[in-house]
Length: 406
Image (cartoon, rainbow, N blue to C red; front, top):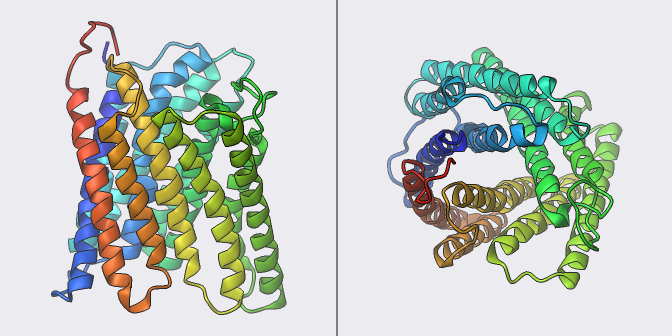
């Protein structure tokens, strides 16, 4: 039997490659002063939606429909039942990318296709959850809720686009960043990785000081809800000032706790295993992203709002992309009969990714040098993800060498 992750991961890699190449081209045009591409939709909105909703849900659902039935002890869905919604997701976001460049009607149609695909995937996972009789379904429930939030956000993006409400569209993207992407990453990592949990939590082992699922999921939920506080708190009012100070304080507190626990775990455990190191660095980026978000709230109150973009990229590129590279590599290697390790090639590509993140953060205060730094960051991102996508993509069309299912 072909494992479900093969189809979903392949489509996710396809969307990742297309969106990465397009964004690099956008940065090249801006940096060189060439004739503008004149997209039909704001490039930042297109980029944000692709990075939040484009490829991550395909990777997430590929993993969930491979590992989820084992967690829940229920029969898995046959691959033929999963293929239609995955095709809808991939086609929807590729149409979004093409339409954003040439015609907004095509982009709008793409978002509706993607919303339908998300709803379909979400419904299939909720049905697995409903069939399960296992006692511990906390992680599965959080993941099901995250996909429901993601479905609402993609549908909201489509509606906002149809109404010409760019600000509302941006809010749905940011809500998806936290309510879908962050929630899935921290929930899966808490279940699978020792340093995302305490000894008393599910899946933890040994003496480690990592935080609870409540802290991780609670922080993601808080951030998703906080996106909408901006819509109801009058800008420049005393309430706005108070909320900004409180929001920043909460984020700095969460980031400090996460980094403190990262330091404690690193002092007690070995990080010689490269794949474990990749997961660990992804978690360090999560703590740094919270600190940067908190600091950016206070800097915005002082008249320097640009740092919020840096914080968002620390989260998306630093944390999410690092965990993506590690998780997808691990699952793909294990289910193809290969050793679950990060070899020299994967480790080098991971290093390029880290350099891309650092350059993206350096571009925030760079002013005149920002276009060049943004282009270099995009080029390094492409140099990291394209060879990785090509390598893993070639595995998915081959049977396991040991003849086992997977």
